[in-house]
Length: 388
Ligand code: NAD
Ligand code: MG
Image (cartoon, rainbow, N blue to C red):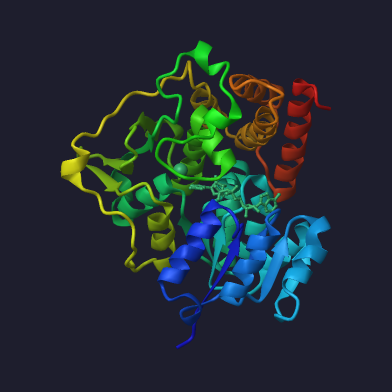
């Protein structure tokens, strides 16, 4: 039997490791060939994964770490590369499916390169859709592969959005855990540290997305992601805070029915659904025990304490380049918060100021327009923080 070929961009991250775990569960090297994997700083883990899965090519995004990676893989016959071009090369290697698990807009160019090969794209990297929107969707379509959402909310919607009933889709309801500061006052939020912000109550994820969950910038990105992925109008996208993270999202239909996907908060379900699509696979994840769960709670999101949500709505309504600007300015503000150069609430203020500055920028017609807006939004955000 021929093995399915799966490459993993960002294999050393949270999504990457969960993806390799799913592959292991599905039979590992017996069932899958792994043409390429990529990482950045954790060379030990990258090399260990490369050997364990017998990959064709392993690349680190850090150009200064090539020697270290080569040394770690000497005698294995595994090809190595380093720097952004090597990540593009990894993404371009022939594969049936590519997991897009790099964090941030750094994932856009490699994911586009993967789309061009015609591989199916399992998309965890939401920034591709937030920044490039329909250009990204079109690129995957042109390549000929499927676009398979891995973000748990979008994967949930993908599971319950009946394509034959698209005419009757009334609303998309994204659930949000509310993060660690769900019940905190604005005053208290002003003084939180990166460490407390990174402590997500339900999900175990990478550092940046965990802090984005605390500020609800993650949900903001997911609203824009949903707009492009499911081609719905901004006012059809709702957010509801649901602290248990059991309902992963819902679709409301014109007959009043609401279809939801439920499960334990474990990314392997969404990853496995994408890898197996259109066939469900078997996974060793925790099963929901409804008697033990007892109650599911819901509350309306508070845009005063979580202004990111209002910024996302503005970006969805304005369209143009505002999704890209929101994300790029947010990436700079987030790094500054992690480095303790700005406070938690300053992040949204900086993003808003850059969005206002760049409100006149027209919609992108090429990916180069997106990269130019990204660079400009970063520059302006740095300037506002005083880091230029
Ligand atoms: P992570 O920080 O754990 O891992 C990120 C990966 O990207 C690592 O392999 C890292 O080496 C690589 N990387 C970082 N910077 C890079 C760069 N400049 N160039 C190339 N590679 C780089 O992040 P994560 O939590 O796994 O998230 C990955 C993506 O998936 C993000 O877009 C995130 O929003 C999305 N996502 C994650 C989860 C989750 O549960 N972790 C859930 C939904 C969506
Ligand atoms: Mg999500």
